[in-house]
Length: 431
Image (tube, rainbow, N blue to C red; front, top):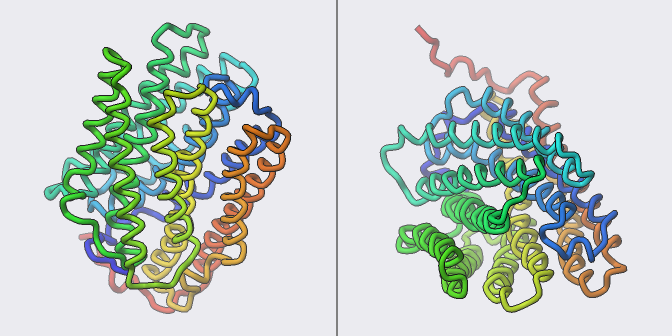
C-alpha cells in the first residue's frame, strides 16, 4: 500500500468511525425485511411512504453511516484537518442519527406523524452537527488538492439536502404536503446521489485506488475539472426543472457523461494496478462502475418511460453503484483501521489486513448481494419472486455484518493483551 500524503498522527479514536460502520448493515437488513413484507405494486411508486421508508433505511441507515464514518476517519488522515472534539461529535451525532433513522423509517411505515416530527429534529440535528463540524475543520487547510475540494463540495451538498430532507419529513409529520413537495423531493434525491455521494466517491477514489491497490493516479485534468462539471450539471438541472423542464435532459446528460468517464477511468486504473492480486473489493469496484454506467444512462432516458421504472434506476445507481462502493470500502477500511491502531499501540504479532476478513464469507456475501440486485429488477416483471430476492439480500447483509464484527473483535481482544512494544516512550509528555 502507498501511504504517501497521509497525516496518520491526527487519526481519531478507532471507536469514532467503527460505531458507524458496525451499525450500517443492520439498517440494510431492516430494509430487506421491509421489502420482504412489501409488494411490487406498492414499491413501484417512488413517493409511497413504504418506498420512502425502505429507500431511507438504505440511504441514511447504510450509505450515510458508512460515508460519515469514513469522513470522520479520512478528514484528519487524508486532508490533515482536525475535527474539534471528534469523539464527542461522533457520539452525539451517531445517537441522533440512529434514533432519527429508526423514527423516520417506522414513522413512515406505520403512519406515525409525531414520530416523523421527532425524527426530523433528530436527523437534522445529527447531520448538521457532523457536517458543520467537518466544514469548520477545513478552515485550517492551506493547500486544496482535488480530494479536499471534492470533500468540501460533497459536504455542501450534504448540508443542502439535509435542510431539504428535514423540510420534506416535517411536511409528512404535520400532514401538509405542498405543491412544491415533488420538486423538492426530486432535488433532494438527485443532489444526494450525485452531489453528495457521487462527488465524495470520486474525491475519495483519487486517494483510495492508489493507496490500497497501488493503481495509477487519476489524470490531473480529470481531477481539476470533474467536480466542477458535476456541480455545473446539477445546477443546470435545477434551473431547467424550474424554468424549462423539457431541457432537463441536457443537464442530465452532462452529469451522466462525467460519471461514465469516471467509471471508465476507475476501471482502467484498477486494471493497471501494480498489485495484481484480486480480492472482493476489486469485484465491488468493478461491479460498481458497470452499474453506474447502466444507471446513469437509465436516469437520462427515464423521462420517456413510466414512473415506476424510476425505482429500477434507483436500484441500479443506489444499489449497484453506491452500495457496492460502500461495501467495498468497509472490507478495506475496517481491517485497515484495526491493523493501523493496533500497530500504533505497539502490537506487531497480529493478523494482516487480509486475514481479518473471512474471504469465503465475503465471496458468498458479494454473490448474494449482486444476485439480489438483479433479482429486485427482475421482480418488477415477475412479482412473485420479490420475497425470495429480499431474503437473499438480508442474508448478504448478515454476512457483511459478521465480517465487520470479526475484524472489530480482533481489535478488542488484542488490546486486552500486552503489546509487543511499549509505545509510550515515543509519546512526548505535555509540559
